[in-house]
View 1 (cartoon, rainbow, N blue to C red):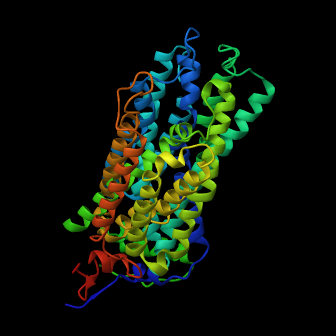
View 2 (tube, rainbow, N blue to C red; view 1 turned 60 degrees about the vertical axis):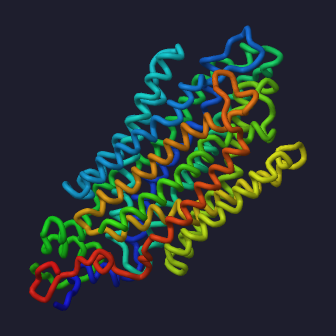
Length: 501
């Protein structure tokens, strides 16, 4: 039987790039901007939290979060994200993409604010409420993954679909960079308004009561851009593919898209190995990606790029951490995302992912093999350049493509669910990376206070290199979706009699 697309879907596939495409990128992208800010800003302030709530004046070193508390603070939002990806991915296929899109944003905004208002001044109360609200913050963030990817894939034309989905995801890079900029500005303002001595001169005065406001402002600030896009999310019509293929209302889909495209559209009446590929590669990517992102500060400290904590006051340390991470984001992370945007519909998903995992493996080995040499004074520049290149090829590579491909290759009735499953599997890898790297990277002879001996930083980098290599191998299973319609990929075209083929 010959098969063909519904007219409304065909019109979307061949539509010229126009204003509504860019509006959709901004509306969906600002959600990812907020997602990245919320997930990664915590890595900037954990050392400050340790100083504020766990400094013991009797000891000769600044306080730091106990091992279990550090693991919880860094990892609890990822646990929430995993749950949110599964739940909202499923809900997006049951109730519609638009129906639940606004709710995830409201949840993110409210829980981000609540995280910054964590109750009390005692460590137990503050950390407990912070973790509680960050779990639900992550739950909302998780919903944004399958919904934003599915909405953008179903709105885009087939020629530039990869570019637009990649552009939505690339806003994550700006969210990471924005978090470092906000931290630099806030910490600089408080440093100049409330000068404090280094820890080794006066332990108590090196913190200052004002520092407790600093981390709260940083955590809450990401709500502003997200809240500004809520109105526009609610104004977006439901995607035509959901309305026509799942709800079965071709008339409504045609009407909605006629308005969006500003043209009259003729009204009509009317699989397993892929899941393995998209879940496994996302899982392996996130083990390495989140290990590197969440613990940049620890890596920079261990290689001596950030001075010893006792030589600085609390806000100076925060400032230096943010400045170092801003440099990595500006030179490696953000450009990597936008290289994907530029080349995804030229090179294709498969080759970008394969190249990304390959280069990540090479550069991780290039750091791990001469690690003892690179961490010596005077050689830090080489370490930072190689480290930045791993971020560049993560984003001009599998961090972007693992987000894009699941939004394209599954049928409309399962697209949001399957994207959520793929993303949740990735977050399982992120949780392993976040918790595992924290313990594994501890020195084999002299671990940090409160930690048991690990395999050391150098061996941990070898493990991450191996993880990237496995990702490379699993990438061979990923199908190429460049230039094909969503219905061609998922075999959802309809037959001559109007029945699904």
